Length: 253
Image (cartoon, rainbow, N blue to C red; front, side):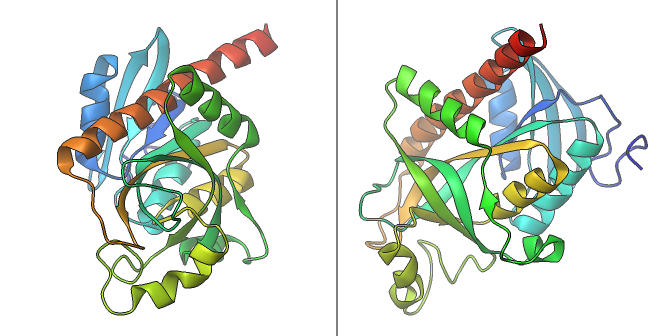
């Protein structure tokens, strides 16, 4: 299976550069490939999965859209691992849950509350969903180099967008109160499954998110401001993939 064309991604082993950004949105993957990568080339396109290879600061990188939610994200990372990929950074959006986080702020994720269904299929909830420690540290360092303000900490992943999002209906504050009170920074739909699968498959996974809305005050980020914040998150993630490669070359050399 690992050496075959992957069922959903439609790519083969070693055809995708091994250091990969994972946005959910197809258009964000295209934006990354055209605005941040040099020598960008589309490797495959099927359903929600669009994959591009490219070069960033003279290092090979890739981007693969995962679609919405943990089920499709799990398919993406499993098949990318089958293709030989080893380093992954989710670059996406979230809803803020903490009064410390403003819309437009960047969150570097250290771990996730496992509110999703997909990761439970892999292993019981007692198993933690944590980002790779080295990757978290490099993401922070790269943000600081660029003087980009960020928050670092725990977020929550879940499956029901209209139950816990800036667009939630009904008494969303009652549903999310426990997470705000326990210091959870934001809520999104993919990270916990990516972290769990990364740990189980022995690959490195991180995540950097932009708060596009706030569940405490229902403020939402304007489109032009979202792009500015997202581009900052993308730069942090790209530079982290480069630094990981430099560190790997130094260690192996």
